[in-house]
Amino acid sequence: MAAYEYDITVIGGGPGGYVAALKAAVEGRRVCIVEKGSLGGVCLNEGCIPTKTLIRTANLLHEIKRAGDFGLEGVDAGAVTVSMPKLQERKAQVVRRLVGGVRSLLRGRGVTLVEGAASFVDAHSIDAGGKRITSEYIIIATGSRALIPSFIKTEGKNRILTSREALELDALPSSMAVIGGGVVGVEFAYLFNKLGCKVTVIELMEHLLPMVDEEVSGLARKRLEKEGVVVHTGAKVRLVKDNSVFFEKGGAETSVAAECVLSAVGRTPDTEGLKAAEIGIVFDRGAVMTDESLRTNIPNIFAVGDVNGRSMLAHTASHEGLLAVEAICGGTGKMDYGKIPSCIYLEPEIACIGLTEKQARERHKNVKVGRFPMAANGKSLVEGDTEGMVKVIVEGELSEILGVHIYAVHATDLIAEIALALTTEATAEEIIRTVHPHPTISEAVPEAFMAALGKAVHCT
Ligand code: NAI
Image: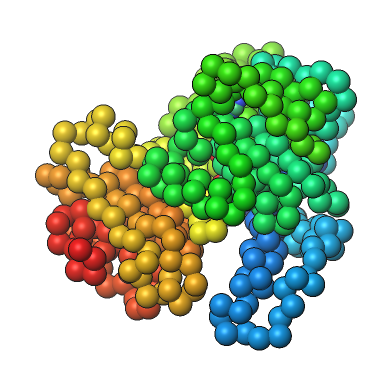
């Protein structure tokens, strides 16, 4: 057997890569991780964490404006302004702290960090910033980058931002046109609207957030509109001329002028400079093709996270990272992409898992749907936001949980219970039999399942 310098080398230090490296070290392997940018990847540096940090301030501002509703007097909400430079400073601090945490975890576990861009030389060796590294196994975790699709033409002098640039703004634009009403488009629309910018969202499909159950995304749309966001759905953007976005809607051409344009029409796997195709790795529509154990067509090479194009979420990437290392160590675990929760950070939050009602009805004959309105949940009333619901979709005969869609305060924390239920194949009855603490938002979950089975207690 050839002697390799490392047992496992990971390319990319995002939530897929650094978790894989740590897990490999925990398993006693000699591990190297190569990173060309900042550890933590998109998630820590220009995605999940910075966005949520900015959204935290937007939510706080909103709460201050409502201070009177909570019995506080003397708060001059009109005098409160947002300092974008200070907000950026806080964001940078949060990011620095987390990136530093990843670095010390890797160091603590004895993982070798090589800073530089990696490219394949052959199936067992890579070049990283001029240094040759040999490894028995290699895990590709190079992530994705924002996509500005070629079907959107540009003319004149544009100011088109991707989410990356939008997170760096140190002056608030007076208006923004957002192309795409997926997760990025909607979260940024929510954020900038709350901070005081006039936002218009233009989405191709008939519904915002096409992956979310229509009933739930419809509620979120209404709330966004009530708060001042202008939403166009069924609208296809063709051209950005200067900072006006031209789109086709119902057969007519319309346009929206804004100070800047945010392009939020998806992301594409990032394998630039990796030379993966050159050593024979097979791609599918730009993504590295993997099996359910995250193995590519070359048996000692794995791919985890956005680069495999399966589910572009940080928690998927980390889970795939763990599973890939387990597979290398002889494990037989497989990814189940139907059981991955999705979280959208609005107010209230959206969290969902499994099938939408529409998908469930297409695939199953006997579908039962239960809803519990948050207006009937005591803790929501205490929190001061009673909008939304827990919607559950159950297979009628076996009480199998098919999907859960939550639009409620703290929804993103509630969905983990359902993820566990799906993993352990718990039924609706088992959730109902589980004692949920009072007063909590979580009480709405068993109530919705009771409603699905026609046994609602706290709602009619
Ligand atoms: P996306 O694919 O979720 O949404 C893009 C949207 O643009 C779609 O709704 C699509 O219909 C629309 N679109 C495409 N062409 C258009 C056109 N010509 N005119 C108007 N609309 C058009 O992509 P997004 O939102 O950029 O997110 C990228 C990835 O990052 C996703 O996988 C997402 O799940 C992930 N992400 C997750 C977050 C979270 O979990 N909270 C936050 C941000 C991103």
